Length: 171
Image: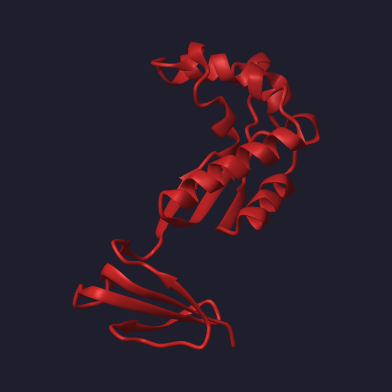
C-alpha cells in the first residue's frame, strides 16, 4: 500500500471535533486516505518535509466556470457590471472550441490547486464549436484535482430576448 508522510509541519490544522492544531505535526496518508495525524509518525513510503509549512485540509470550491479562466483579464470586461461583462465576453467564448475549453479548465484547476483547493465543481453551460464537458473532465484528470463536473444549458438566445448569442445556447 502506498504511503506518504507529511513530516514536521510548523502546524497541522486538523479541523477535527476538538479543532486541534498540532505544532511540529505529521500527517500519514495511506492509499490516498489520511491514516494518522500526530507527531513522530513513521513510514516506509515517501516523506515530504513540511518544516515552516501550515498543513490544512483541502478547500472545496462548490461553483466555478472554468472556461472563463482564459478571459479573466479582457480589458473591455474589467470593472464592468455583469451584463456588460457578459456582452464583452460572449463573442470571445463563441470562438472557443475543445482546445480552449481544455486549456482554460487546466489553468483554472491548477490555480485552484495552488491555492489549497482539492475539490471543485464546475458548471459548464456553453458548448461552442464542438466543445464538450469531456474537455474539462480531461483537464481535471491531467491536473489531478478531485472534480465534479456539471452540465448546464442556456436556452434563451438574443433572438428570443436573452442575453447570449444564439450560437451559445441550447434548446
